[in-house]
Image (cartoon, rainbow, N blue to C red; front, side):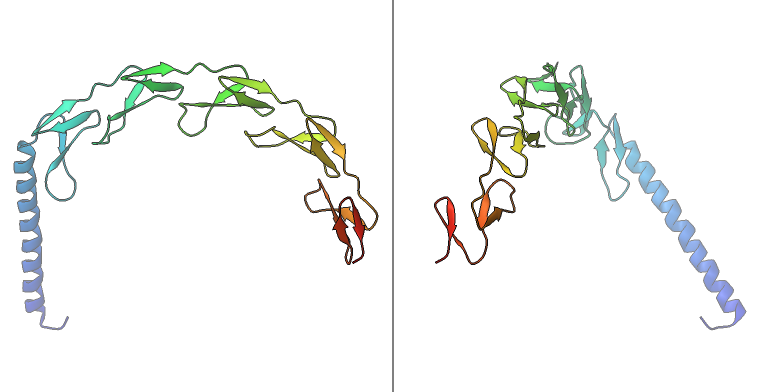
Length: 195
């Protein structure tokens, strides 16, 4: 900015006056608006209007308390029920009922309203059943299927891990549980032949 010092001082006084005037006007507006607030509400930080406090829901021009059952907490959401069950409880109608965990189970890590079986167990209906891993097998991280896989060089046959029979001119494949012919041999039934 260029100009003489008296002009600059005059411009700065005007800017300062305008800033003070806008602050006073904003405070007066906010005070007037806050006088119109219903109980259990706060003026919005930005824009106009107001929102109900957590645990209350806007109904017409008032904030009505949400009925929160025991073992639940207010979500603060203006939509839906406005509450969720605490960890270890599940919603049944308008109540939060404690989860009944079977032996070898734990609460799921996300919401805590369901359970999963510990490693080495699979869910069967409402219980956790031990996984029986056959010789030459190992536990998997999957909570579905058998819960086990065969070691490399073995394949699952019923509930056992049986050694893979690798014919001449073949090798164990990438999966580790089957075989594949060496090049240029081709698979024909249970052997590798040149074509």
